[in-house]
Length: 160
Ligand code: MG
Image (cartoon, rainbow, N blue to C red; front, side, top):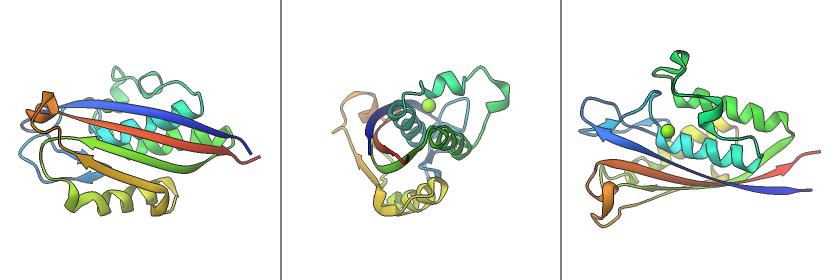
């Protein structure tokens, strides 16, 4: 049984007039994440952690923001494709740990919905998926609510 670990991070700018999707959930907010896709910073960080764990490159390489077919795409569809790639290399997910850094909006009321949504998309138990959030004490771009950062660590195991 071999285990592999992967790390991912992503940043998106917050702007007026965009929806805010985090972990596949639409979060009520006066600003949303800018990006080519639906700009779900959490899903993008998870995808990079999984791709990294399987040594399969990064999300920008497989899903370039120059691809018109990906304009406005639901990032859950990207995650499903990443899972298919990782699965095709005979890996199962052991667990994921995800950390959001943002000043606002307050995320704690939505953590369970994110876990529920992502566990469903990924075909894992919610117990395999940890989602946490922190402010940055008003420091930096997250603290000024100019953007959101998400970090993710994934552990996968070979199922052969
Ligand atoms: Mg991104």
